[in-house]
Structure formats: C-alpha cells, structure tokens
Image: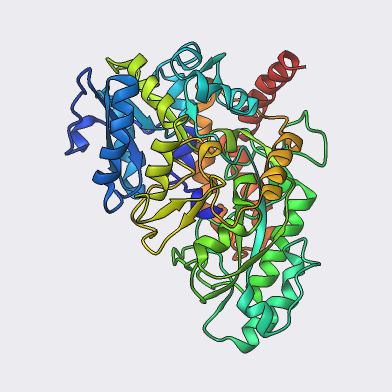
Length: 483
C-alpha cells in the first residue's frame, strides 16, 4: 500500500547526500534518557489515546527488560530535517526511525548492531527474511532492526470499483500505462468531478528496473537487459515507452494539467479519483488491506514483477544512536516490540475490547472503536508476522502470503550501497538537473522525446559519466564478492 510508503526527503538530493544542518536551527532540545527509560523517535503524528496504549505496552516492556519506552513523535513534514539536525549535532537519543539510512550509517551516526541484535533481540532477529539482513548491511555491518513486513513489493494500478461497476469497465487486460487510455476516456466523458488518473508531484512512472541510489536519479539496472551494467533508465526502451504513454494521457486531459507541481491529495476513501498507482506486498493480501483502509472496494492490476530490493529491506528501519548510553537496553526494547504479540497488537490495533477483540483462531476482529487516528501503523511499528491478521484473512491467504515471500526473486542490487565519497559534488550537480525534469517527465507534462535528450546533455556537464563509472566500479566489486 502506498499509504504505508512515505518519502522522507524533501528532494532527490536529500536521499543522496546528508544535508549538513547545525543544531541552532532546531528549537527542540533532545534530552538523553536515563538507564531506565529508552527514548524512541517515531515518524508521524501521535495517535489519540496513545498514552493509554503505551502504558499498557510498558507494563510488558518493563517486566521483560527492566526499562520503559518513551516514544516521541515527529510529523512527516518535519522528520527529515529534525533528524538531520540531531545527527549532525550529535544529540543524544536511543532509538529512531531511520532516515537517510545508508548515508548516516556510513557517517557513524548509528550503532553497529551486527552482534547486538542476535544477542539481545534474538527471537525477532531470527524471524527476519535474509533479504532484510542483506539489504541493510553497510560495509559489512548491520545498523538497523528492520520491521519485518513487505520484504518484497510490486507496483500496481489501482481502480475505484464503483466506477468499474457503473460503466461496466474491464481491467483484466490492463498491463501497462498505455492500456489505461480507453478506460480513462470513459471517466473523463462521464465524470466531470473525477480525476481519471491521480498523479501529481512525486509520482514515478515504473518499469522493470532497479536503482542503485533511488529512482529519481538517472542510474539503474535494467532487469530486462544486462543486469551487470549500470545504465541511464531514461534511455531504456520500456521506461521511454511508458513515459510516452503518460505524455499522451496528459495531452488528452486524463491527468491534472498542473500535475508536475500539484500536491493535491486524492483520498483513498473518496470518489474523486478513478485510477491511481499503489505499492503492494505480501502483508497486503492482494487488495484486501487496501480495500479495508479505503472503506470501499478497490481492484488492482500489477505492472511490475514482485522483487526483494534494498528499498523494501530499508522501508522501515529502526536504528540505535551511536551516542546512546543504553545500546544493549535499547536493542532489548526493540526485541520486545518485534517479538511480543501483546505489545505489538496493542500498539497497532489500539485498545483490546474497544478497538478490536481476539477471535478463537488468533485473528483480530475490528470493532466500531477502531479508527485511523487512534493506533499506530503496522508497516513502521514492528514485526508484522506476530500481528493477528484481521478476521477476513483466511488460512489460505496466509499460506499464499508465506509462499510468495519464499518465491519472490531478489534484486541483483540487493545489499549494494554506494559509497559517495568520490562523487559527492557530481551527485549534487546531477540532482539539481534531475529536479528540473523529474516531475515533468513522470506526470506526462513533458514530451520525453524532447526533454530527455536535453536533460542528458545537462547531465553530462554535471558529471554523469564520472558517477556512472564509479557506480559501475563499486557494483562490479559487489557482484564479484557475491557470486
């Protein structure tokens, strides 16, 4: 679910280079924790009734670890900046939701958990898919306790079923962006207040590609081509064709004409959109969870292959500060969060008996008290494997989930992390160029056949080839070590 996948950065550059910020830019002073209290920073808004939930959880946490958890919240919009300030200033905390994970790990901001996790959080550590370990290993060391959840994912096009039914539309043959055109035409003609394709700033056109940095930078491995080579994804046939298709949809008015700068949200539970792009993984149980969150039936079609990637492995990492005075105790607390069903189900579902009740077959039946703003999200809290599935999840669906995790392929880039020391200036220059084109290309606003050649010329001047060669050199070494 894309609702579970938020972008922590304010621009492409922020995911490549850690922004250097001084502590004087923050009005919040982080107080270090004492030995009996573990301070944890979580991303997002504090849920209603959270203090009650944490008090219940702390009864178990204190019993098992001798410490209590102090969970503090920083909003999505402020998290990246505030955590960057804390990292650059060396302020003290114990646990945090990781941002710029690889860069900060390379800079020594996070504690080395390679030996601590198996020792102090063994039960949770042992349940992790190996892809989580490989995808979070930086220079041979593990710096994160990843949330065990959607270890693989694929991109899907999702449709609001009320409009499929109303106009008797068939999506069974929708496999690409181009296939959307006749469906969007029906919606534009008949539903004047509905956006045919919900796309705006930050939207990314997908293809069978994997990225050594992130998908806004012009470096990729073409999964349909030579997977040992780093290429410019904007020169690959599939992505170019998809960008052309988006431009055609844009010209026909099926996408907002200000999409490249538009930050308008199209609520999942509303009727203001017909089609959108989402991300799904095994714990979404197809469209089951998406439909549950939307409160209306949604139908999706896959447009990429399921893949275990660095992005998924690093989707929700919790790290321990290298400045923490309580590293072992912090890992113990992470261990409880990720291994104790009573603690995790309380935090994720809310108060038992009010928000939900446990069924005889260890499922969670949601009650009227279950609301979106009175509990934490599963994807960025703890081990999804110990969460009780909701009552509509069958044993067959659980088996399919587990089988699909075992069967999913690993990206050839899984475990590869670029050391940027030799190319920081060039990466900054390239990011500046990409910021001029990325939203225009992905929303269909720009004609790719005109914009990409122009962009590529600017990229060459920005030092593109130097970065590509450095990437290729490091990738070659990675592939040789991981034969």
